[in-house]
Length: 357
Image (tube, rainbow, N blue to C red; front, side):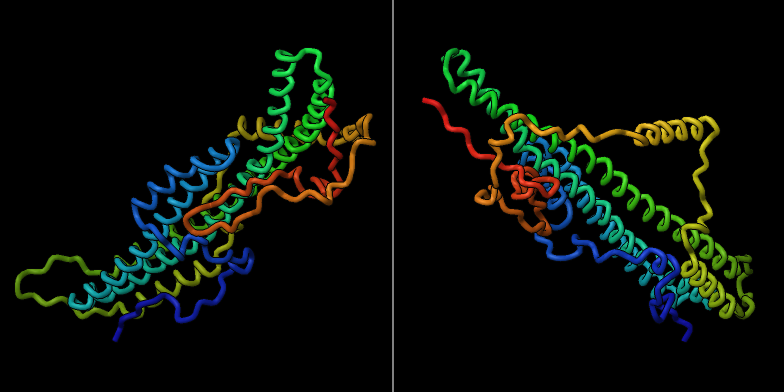
């Protein structure tokens, strides 16, 4: 009659969820083809085998993070099963042990649910890192084009030093280098922006999860105090257990603490030493000083041969984006510079120069 089974009958949004709405469920939670160690090994070993060279290392990181999320999901599920089994075992024990183990099962089950929620927030970090990988993959074609033209020029200079095609290729190389500079700058800017956002997601989620687990652990210790561990002599009867209301109150207090927790009320704070704080502030000031008053008006000076640029409306992307399924994170192979509008919404195409025979 005293079994609890769950901490809350209804799942009203907590203060933290109201302040920071939860993300959608993780993409790793459905549609599995491979489970356990086999799936982990396949993802890790095959991650960098395909796709552009520039994106291979980050592709492997993204796949390894999927393995981490699968492991976290498994831990959450098994912790909830353990919590239920603890409550089932305690039913046959004395009243105080039975009541406390039931409430401890409630707390442990809540930890499992928090871990399941942590997986969803962890996926925000992983998806953000994937966006960097996709940009890396899109920059690779501009690098390859520049290298191909450079190799062609070197080959002609060795075989046919007087070939008029060398001049044409050198003009193409100038344009390819300009395009590559734009793509590399875009990659650099997006990488810095996304990596800060990605790990902010991860650390915020980890901080909330850790704080709430610490809260549950504290109330679990209070529950243990309700068990009378005073030794008894054979034949002696223990006093009747009168802690039902106390255990319910502890559970209610734990629920209130979890519901009302927000980042601003975190018990643990990371305080920098004076030296670390000074050096960090100096770095921030240097960044701020470089960005203020920076004249960028001349960075996009037009090329001398603008007349050779034409509309790219007749061009199409060489590759198509593919949906990211559960087991394979396909890397889009088209370039940022291969679109009809270019990086900044302007036409970046050109007519092909005729090759002089």
